[in-house]
Image (cartoon, rainbow, N blue to C red; front, side):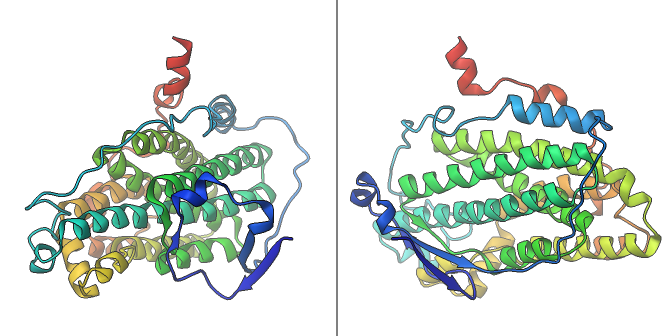
Length: 368
């Protein structure tokens, strides 16, 4: 019998998956649904003109149909990562030279590394669930036929992303960490706002830009070939999603009254502050004796943390400028964040069709 539990907020404990349990998958009778309720004054719209009005959006939609990869068929789950214990002097940047790291045993250091990976990937999982729900909202509230079609295809993309990260976390990491409170704040803001274009800004420009920065960092640094393959497939989808947002919002935002443009620019700025300074999880470090302040300082100084923020704003700031949200009024605040150096880099409105249309790696190997 299905059990449903309603909660006031997300879980705060780590969820563990035993290998023996996974080998004998839970039956439907063992499943408990834990859900948190949110409410939104969503205003939907029919669109009675079914003709394609935007060729770029329709082409992105066609690509979504063509490259609808399947996590069961297009991911090689037999790929193995080489397990190893961190040697003396090895470890996460910033931590490895700290006296508290040196005091850990080899087993503790290896566990620290596994948990750090699980913590990061858990945020991907939670973020993709948020993206799934926002994309489904966009189907109803997007004002044009092309945008509704694309949002429908994106909804299925996000469902795949939830599926693939959940499976990876269960089978590879055997644990799922709770959502970062600041990521939850961003998702709640986008999900519960009544303005459809703010949902576009929040999801397609900001949260998807955040995801691409994180995925790019993981893709370039992970030693696990399976994770590299998973992230590579997800990045293809996310590239289309950001391109959709930039191309669709560009004309719409510029046509708004200046007061409304400034409201949206302020929202984008506040989200960037959260992304730059607060999307740092310290719970793994705290489990191993580091204080929150020590963990935050280590992340701020590490090359990995700095590279992530660079990837994030290299992608996000040109897109915000392209859609008209780097207004004269808000520019000084972005300048205080130190991110305006990226404003003239390439934006995602200039779509690299060759990259988006490249064959899927697994399908290409099978065809050969």
